[in-house]
Length: 464
Image (cartoon, rainbow, N blue to C red):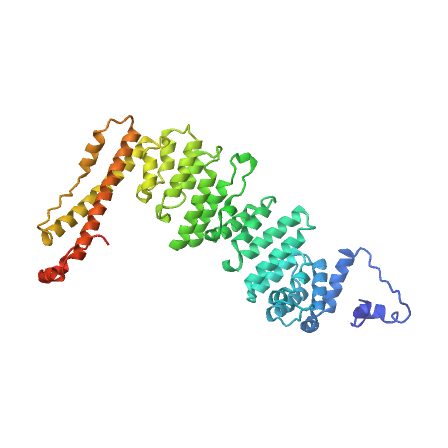
């Protein structure tokens, strides 16, 4: 430093010039110099490296740039803007972007050849890492490589970091990940970060950013990721509020349009989660209702898994009032329940009686529509081709009720169950006759069909 300062004109040159050759242990004492030795080094560095000298930094070796970065982070505060630091950072990122810096080790794989610089930058403090990564993003350095470096940096620095330093590292890391392309990091990585920050006191703002990142990839998650334990003060086993926020974040990320395929995956994931948490005796009816209602009806093609979860919850929480049961069951779409699920629901005493009645009305309406369609097909087909064969298969929904009334039933559940079974038998009979008519059409001679002339084209198409 003495020789560097002495090479410049002025007071320093006058002070050191004639003494340089007389003593090897030259010392200069500054009384009450602001910020002490570090402050003096900073002033001296800024004095020595003027704009013309900074142009030479681009010719420094990779090792020299790293040494300069380490010295800068020791001398400069995070908020201090330094022309020297910016120039060094620019050179470092330029080397990373162009990969002109040869790896100091012999690399045996492509990944090692690209990521060899990870270890070199691990010694930098998080504030300087923030500057390096932001500049790297602006230079279009591969986002996937950046996310891998951030994970590597977090794991390395956590070995010796204090709780406060860990919070700072995670907050910067979350901010930087939010700047990257969503495809550059996995859902597993995000849930890993979530587990780490759950034991740290990071800001609510950064927690929200992380949850939004996870929500944007919720369709890639698995049930194991969602089973995050809740805090002890909440009482219930898993953090239900987290899942509710993640599902809402999924919709927010998708704005007004979400692909049906992605929505189906999220619905399947939520149904699996519902089955898991339904057995929690501490889960309140309001929280469970919020879970079953968090997705719109069109998100699910089938409601069987949803019915299974509700069935488990009502089994565990047997003392619920009728109103709370109805709130939970309002999520069910009976038209999307299988026949087996409907049978189980009709004779299930855990469900409100009004639910069983609604199921029966829904099925009766569907059966009446089916009767009308089948009867129309039978009448049309009989009058045009098989007039000589009289088929009397007209069955009305009233016959189903008569069939049920003939039996002395002990309770309402069995009564509805028998009616559903009768309707199922009727549907089976109609399908059998439909198959018979298809076979008969196939056996009609071509000459007989040709005699119908142009009317043949208007033969009704029965079951396909």
